[in-house]
Length: 148
Ligand SMILES: [Zn+2]
Image (tube, rainbow, N blue to C red; front, side, top):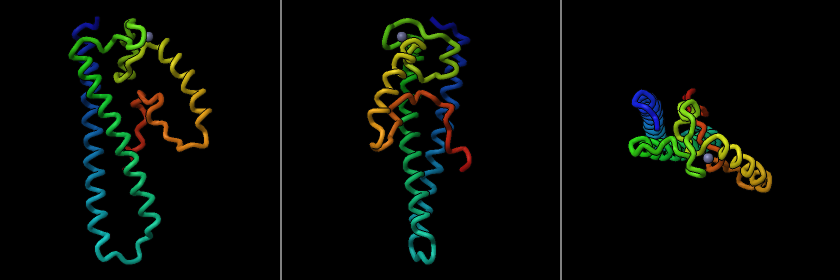
């Protein structure tokens, strides 16, 4: 069981990540509204470039939605007192691991096991769509939108 201090730290970490993602999502909304406006009376804008940017934007927003869902789930588990319970083997997840990856639902042993399975699945799927957001994505450190 986590102590109050640990719970507070995890909550702060999750809530700041949540706020950041919501801000990004709002920026994305702004972006598509601007895009609609600029498409009225469009002239020599490089359309393929613009499409490229727009589809990247949409992909990022899907990822943000996905991560936000994970964060909401983690906050629920935090309230329920089950955030440090591995959903696979029910062993406690170490606090340091939780602090580094608060949305994780697996202890390190189960995660490593899952990653082994994932890498064989990814190999089997190569040449496919290359969509990997459902795989190994409890890694909040990946934030490709910082430069926007
Ligand atoms: Zn486990």
